[in-house]
Image (cartoon, rainbow, N blue to C red; front, side, top):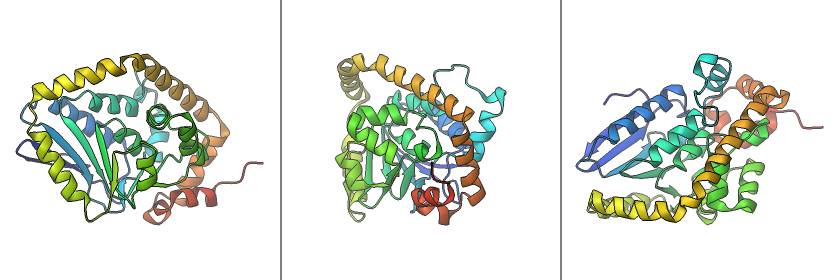
Length: 280
């Protein structure tokens, strides 16, 4: 498998996937397409039992969705979803959620916007304590609409979800663990050993046993399926309202004018505060 934004290496029953889209690992249409393609392969790969995703960039797991791609997709009717209640990022997370393998994200650095929405659809998330998580969308006049608003509410509860989503600030790994967004925040010098031990244990579980556990969990959370899809539909309504509004258009223009550079993205909330005019 050869991809432009992903490096893939199989080691026995483990598939190691490294996000590698320099200069700052922006998620774009190409990355989304490749992640869909990889998910399709995994549905027909019984020899893979665990998928571990990490990043080639120590500062950025996934920065966020590329705003230039967002504008291009929004203005091109041919790229609109055939299903108005489900957009591409939502569908991507759902497709990975449905995989038979156990999927794990190892997060070191910044994971924001669409990147965080994607990893919230994986089975497990582990991060260094210094990693940073953020949904910056509300500071730009719209909302986390790739499943982020819905999944954050399910993971953290309404009060903490409002804090995460409306503050649009960076939450470190320790805070993200406390709020239920990740499994654990570990010291940087301990995360590899912890994951090596966990992956070693998971690989020993037969696909049949994994399927049994998944089916039980599915039954437990079955009543949440309809509300989750209602939330995803509401996110899409919010996106359409945002795209039609001046606040979102101005916010995207301001950030694109400043540039999606490493310097600006290292502290994205501060950059957004600097480049956007205050609301009167």
